[in-house]
Length: 121
Image (tube, rainbow, N blue to C red; front, side, top):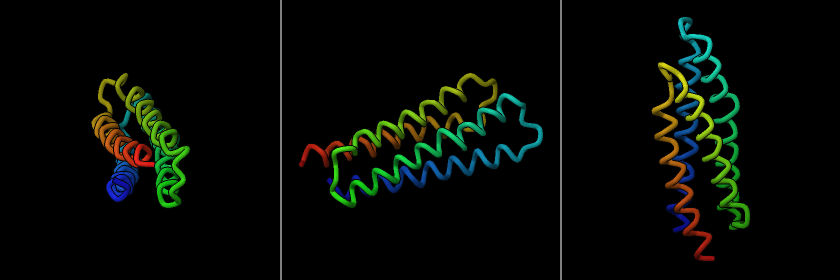
């Protein structure tokens, strides 16, 4: 279970980084309306930065077999992605809404596998 949890957590980190890059590209579009620009910037600079940070922390906890805070790190990442998704959902033409929804599924997978590791302890 630990190997799968590590793999899923690494995949989550890569997926979040990819979404951050998509937000960066969206922000390069000069015609992006102000509300969409603000939502993309918040997703990239705040929400996804937190999700990535929490996921890196989860990876470190897995590597150290220090599982006490593991569930909290996965929850922090999911909460940050939900905040991005919610911000995007209020827009008429959200640039990265679909990616945020997909990342929530990735977060759930990583968290679920992490929970298996915790249960094994």
